[in-house]
Length: 474
Ligand SMILES: Cc1cc2nc3c(=O)[nH]c(=O)nc-3n(C[C@H](O)[C@H](O)[C@H](O)COP(=O)(O)OP(=O)(O)OC[C@H]3O[C@@H](n4cnc5c(N)ncnc54)[C@H](O)[C@@H]3O)c2cc1C
Image (cartoon, rainbow, N blue to C red; front, side, top):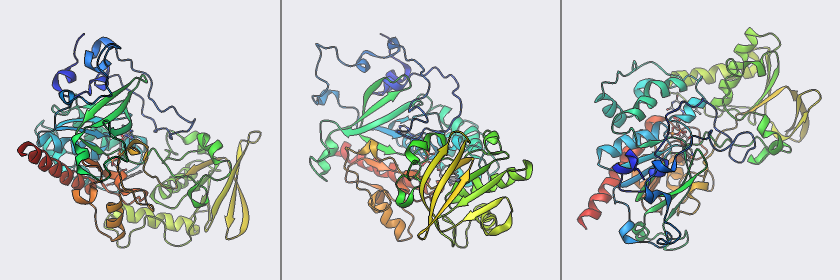
């Protein structure tokens, strides 16, 4: 049986997901977990068993029991698994390479899957803030031409001009495994409740259940894990109190929960139609603004904009240092307050229920306005009510999340105190060697910016390197 290139390179068991045929995969929005709207897996790209080393395929029935910890089979101490090949996960990988880690990145979709899913949206931040320092050093060695520092990319531009070349750069190439979903993470042979808060848990490696695009599953091991899996694939529900409204679970697959490209890819769904947009953050503001632009091009296009509040929009920052974000909210507020006849604003509303009439192909949305019932009809519904972390992958680890935001608790405390949560101490969990970084570290807060994520991973990689040196010395 042949060993793959990655298999030869590694001292640990990541090879099951290392092989891909490199075939292009269509860009598409990530599925909502648990939703019939989309499969959890990308189209099958079959891994031939003869491309996998024998160790990968698991022991034969007569072989050793893989559940029994075998000190001889421990991965190297410098093994580091990163979940998510978004901008922060890749920056972490570039920084970890510099510190001599045997690093591998597991990506459920393709590199930059989330910015690709909002690919038409212009970022608020310019290139100088969007390129991480370790990534810039790695790409710089490859003769990469940095985009103009003060220009702003779209989500797709971020991937095409930066993330894709970064993942393909020598050094990282072969270490970024697309279409490899981390389904669960545990400590090998150690239950969540065992040795609670005890640093001795670090004696066992993490055990990752990873699923490839063909649905095949393997266990991979590493002594440290950085979870940079983002939040864009787990949007919040529209219903009052954050739980689904009546009918929402059933209708979610045919509504949208993402930043849809209403003037491009999804134009036909919205042109000449009434779209009901729910939410008051930057995503909702962007959607409403784009629908208004569509209305100028396509007569009959209209928007019903439903928000919970009636004052400032969610995500508005006083004296905003990012002019593009300040401008978006200024325009959105003007639209909300009657600035364009295409927009009908319904403020102070809680969403109670959705119905869909399959004869008229229209939705009826039940709202509660401070005790007063109101019904709105629309052809399409876009819910942009924010995003939150998917805690399922680390459910069996000792991760201490805030009951209010679902961010790691010390990060939530820092955010509540108005401090930027970037130091490894705050990002650390009771689970030694497990760090949540990037957009996911902010829990349900939408205020995360890449610059913060890059500072986070610099600090985390530094802490992991110090831990490695200490264990080598001890
Ligand atoms: C519309 C929009 C515009 C934004 N504009 C800006 C901006 O202008 N400037 C700025 O600084 N920030 C912006 N942000 C915020 C933030 O920087 C981005 O969300 C950014 O993509 C976060 O990077 P990340 O690496 O933390 O996570 P993500 O980019 O979300 O990457 C996470 C990756 O993990 C993968 N993944 C998820 N689960 C698994 C799993 N179980 N196994 C394997 N892989 C998994 C996903 O497929 C994804 O590729 C914006 C966000 C949105 C939604």
